Image 1 (cartoon, rainbow, N blue to C red):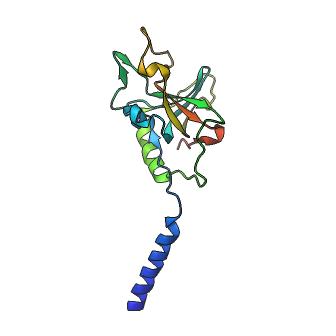
Image 2: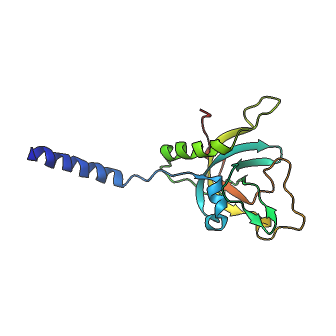
Image 3: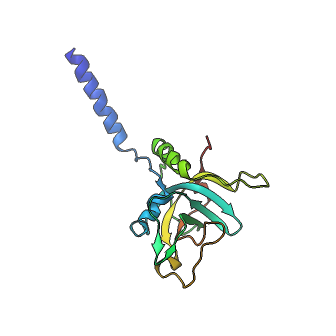
Length: 178
């Protein structure tokens, strides 16, 4: 019995040691989580989860039903982040990049409770999908000092209070709608 216990402990320590060098999986953040404290996430690299919307005026990650609203004076910002591609300035992902699937599943359930994908007359599923994008959070220029008369656009996505600067389309991970 003692041999079995010592052997089990040895195997357990080996497993811990082998996993110690492996990088931890990246836990995605919801759009609401980042916008809830935008100043804390400025300049930070994150994996951002939300409704990916492709529109004529740009690409966005968004979420509906955030618990707290982001405001500047009397203006209430949409819960949206503009996606901006820059192959040079966008952050590189870690060498062994892995997304935490359990956390993704849990957070996607929360997002889907209040957020729906758009339904378009012309039937393309490419315009709204669930996605994670890996990039750096930057506040929009207008966020710190919004111009007089700033109004939300009909799309509900603009003006976005922040942008996520990412290296390229290889860092957009589309999620199953199931």
